[in-house]
Length: 116
Image (tube, rainbow, N blue to C red; front, side, top):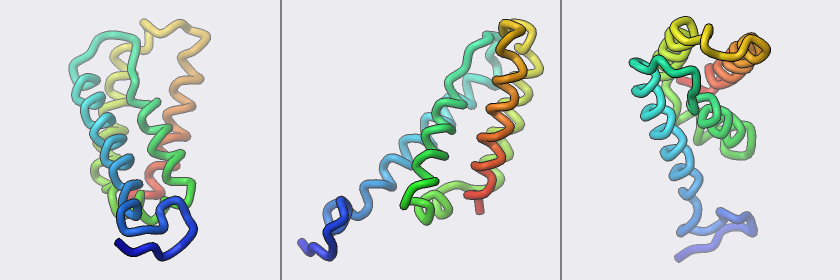
């Protein structure tokens, strides 16, 4: 095995480990999006998973995010989330409704920057 830098991922065994985290985040988002398509509950976890993906994308793994996130995929996630929000927002306590939507707007805007 080859070592090529002092970075945590600076060797052949670790250099693709960040991709595993992106794949896991994308899988979690996909699973949660499927659930949102039919859910009538006021709770969701998709924004938490998107937040994690966006956080990882901001760091030194930006190139990995760009290669793994597809623009049409993000559009589907966004559409599904907002469909769920329209269907269920009256069940969300009023003091949180606008903040949740605002948070989603910000996360999807940032995530769209990584899509290709």
